[in-house]
Length: 238
Image 1 (cartoon, rainbow, N blue to C red):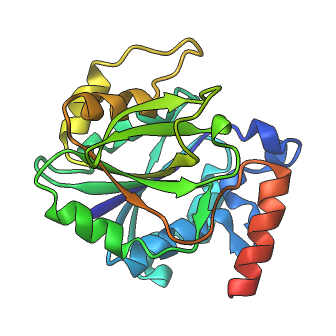
Image 2 (tube, rainbow, N blue to C red; image 1 turned 180 degrees about the vertical axis):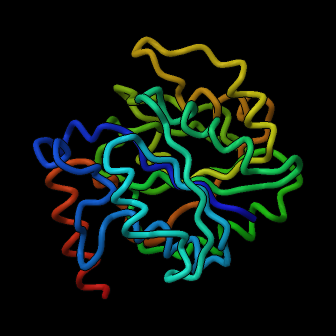
């Protein structure tokens, strides 16, 4: 199985830091943020990894990561020319993923303690479709919240005022290559982007969206508060 690590975006919530450098290269604990996603993929046996980056700091990624040999992986890079949404960034992986392959996608600012291996193994046993990873949060109104019935997700509601549960969808996704057909049929949302939730809801409508539940710590390190908390937790873990 291959991995796709999405590290584009403008990092507006972390300005002025991200006026200088892409947020996925900001230090967290003892390493740049991007390091942790690569390490989690490697620990799960995934060594072929595509990193989708923005134009900002592209040279710094190459300087730091190179071809990935020092981390025991093989890295490929694609540039997302402008912020067009997670699903648009994912579309850039269509040439990297071969027909019939399954693959895992990580958002580069999602940091967590769990091993990816149980999720990857569960998806490997899944005949087709997609799988997302859920976690429990204090305020689910800030996230995409799954509606679950008979062990399947039937829909995901973005930032609901009255969440069905305290679970949210993390930035860990697994797909078959049908995902690229779904992306091709998407229309931009009200904010002008191709939304990953729309992709997941297409799988859900077909009864093909399974899920796993995270057991340990997780954060979306997109704010100063979560970045500081992530640094503390990861530093202690090291």
